[in-house]
Image 1 (cartoon, rainbow, N blue to C red):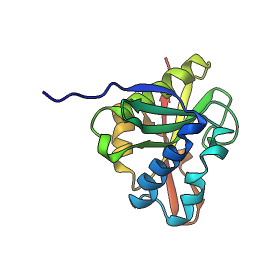
Image 2 (cartoon, rainbow, N blue to C red; image 1 turned 90 degrees about the horizontal axis):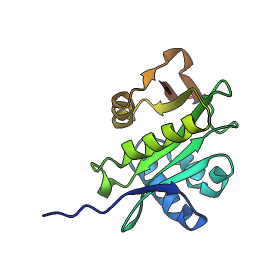
Image 3 (cartoon, one colour; image 1 turned 135 degrees about the vertical axis):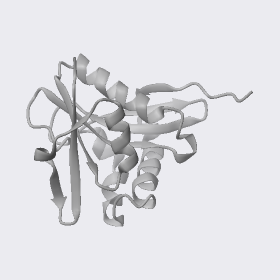
Image 4 (cartoon, rainbow, N blue to C red; image 1 turned 180 degrees about the vertical axis):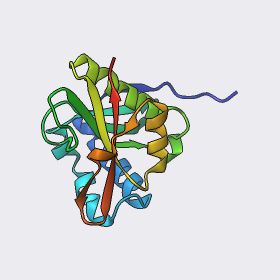
Length: 165
């Protein structure tokens, strides 16, 4: 019988920042999803913590996933009104994938956005992030191609949204 460590989704603490940075850079840069030039922003967890609510997935071994939930302000970059929330930089440790951690983090973002009075969650994802796109679609996100954008030349982002009931 295989034992699966219990999973908790909770607010990140400053003690988690180094692990979040490591996971995020490894997932995005080493995973070939973004260029090396983006590593500095991905590693800036203290800066991110001032513009987003950082959540972690923690099991008995430590932090195995993270996401930055944006309920207000300009860090979301795809929200267009005060009744929209967003999240960014969703990551799951490759050794912990397949345990529903990404789903749990997204569902926590949806629940917190709804509790904050938001009517929808809008996110953007890179064209190469096909696993993330499948996850979002399974969780009820739909494409908003009219809101796709290009933050820098050569980086095309797809926008998805999920209405909150």
